[in-house]
Each structure stands twice: as structure tokens, then as C-alpha cells.
Length: 329
Image (tube, rainbow, N blue to C red; front, top):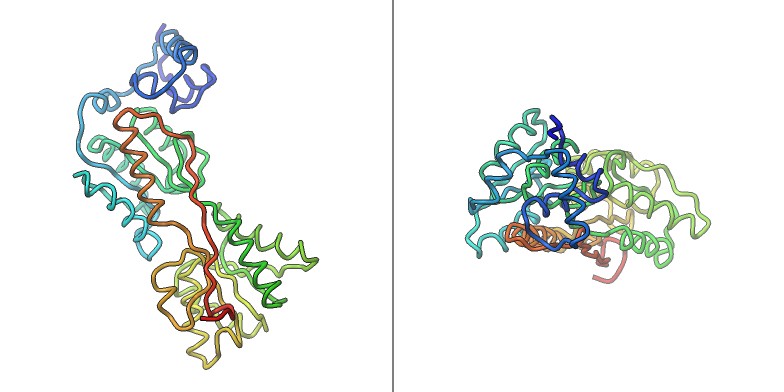
């Protein structure tokens, strides 16, 4: 029986498995139990499911190329991720297409077009709509998500909320700060939402009431623009959502003749190279950005070669104490 419009998500729901499992069964790769394989195959045959020609083509040929998709390409965060991708792809002779989707209304169409010319794709979480990812998975394109994301494709995540919680406790307990402000826009960002929750929880554990966050962007210019408001607010510490914001804020504070950390403690997240080069050095949460890009690329190449990979790979973060919080240089 042929059901027009039957897609991979519906087959997965009918068989009670993930989309990735349907893809593995159809392509005949990876490790799937005989019972699960039989159940998926029965659903495929019952509903006459057939993927697009793209999936069939990818099963039979190689392009020697991958695509990595980010919301934007500026700043050290994405530079470090791309560096990680290249450390794995280049030695293996695989070319990499880097795509930025920021303000690109035609991005979904471009991704589907690029998918015809690559062997697999790594997509940063929150970059494209769920329906686009479903379409790519349904075409049986090997796919890995970078960062927390609700899609069923394998995901590589970095858990920095525990280290961020430790950072806030360090400021409250070890340095005795009592008027901290969180800088960053948490709405729409799983990472920043987790950091705000860690900030709030660390205060509540000590019986303290956290101040409302300063909702702003995460580029250096946003840190610069926030300086006057933060200094006027009488805060003793600014806990920034990333290093770029923290470095911008630090430049602005020092430029106004104030001292860090004497007049204002400043911390960030990411541990980008500049964080250890400025004076004072920036206290931050080091996220394994290069490892994140490298791990996603290794998993993607394994999938292309037919290997079964873990549904989630977690890379931990760590607290790096430097002089911007008052610790010894």
C-alpha cells in the first residue's frame, strides 16, 4: 500500500523508534537489533515508504565533502568550532563547506541544495527550523547536531551549567560579592537559559535574591554599551554570558579609569584565546570548543562509514580562575 506524503518521522512514530533508527534500517548500516529492524521494515513495507532520490544517491556515492551550519560566522566562538572541524577533516582529505544562516531567508533551500553535494552535515543547535532538520534526516543524510537540540539526530553537547554554577558560588563564597548582575539574553537560547538558572540557583542556595539580568547581545560592542549602566548600578561583579561581552565590558570599564577587579569583577564563558592575554586575565568557564567541532566531525565521518554512534556525546566544561575576579594572576 502506497501512502502519498508518508515521511520518515511518521514511519519512526509508527515503529516506535527514532528517525535515526529508520535511516539506519533503510540504509542497511549501523547496529540495530533484529526485532527493531523487523518492526521498522514492516512499517516501511506496509506504508510503501520511499525516501527521496537524494538518500539513495548518498548511499551509493561519496563526495568527499562535509557541511557545517552555524547561525553566524563572526567572533572567536565559531572560529574555534571551525578549527576543531578542520583538525579532523583536513588530515582525512575531506573538504568542508561552512554555511552561515544569519538573516538568510533562503537558508533552508540552500541547505537542501548543499545536501546534494556533501556526504554529511553538522548543524549548530537552534540554527534552522525543526522541519528542515527532519527533511534532511528523512533524506538519509548523515547528520550530527552541535549543542542541545530537540531533534532526533545524534548530538554533541557541552555541559557548562555545572561549571557556571561553580563560578557564581566562587564569587559569592570565596570573594564575598553580594551584588552580581547576569549579562545576556536568555530567551531563545538554551545555553544562556541554563546559565541564568545556575546564576539564580547559586544565589538561592545561600539565601540571596538575585538581581534581574541585563538582557543584551553577546558581542563585544554590547559589553561596551552596558558599561555605564553597570557602573551606575553599583554592582560589585558582572557575570557575562560569554567572553566577548566580558572583554567588551572590561575594555569600557578600564577606559573609564576604573579598575578590574577592584571597582568591578568581570567574568565570562568560553575561554577564548584573548581571555588569557588581556590584563587582568579574564576568569571564565572554559568550554571545549575545538573538541566540540572535532568530535562532531569524527562522529559524522563514522556515520558516513556506516558506524552506529551514540545518541548523545557530552563534553564537560571547567572553571578557569584568573585576576579579573580577584584571584592571584
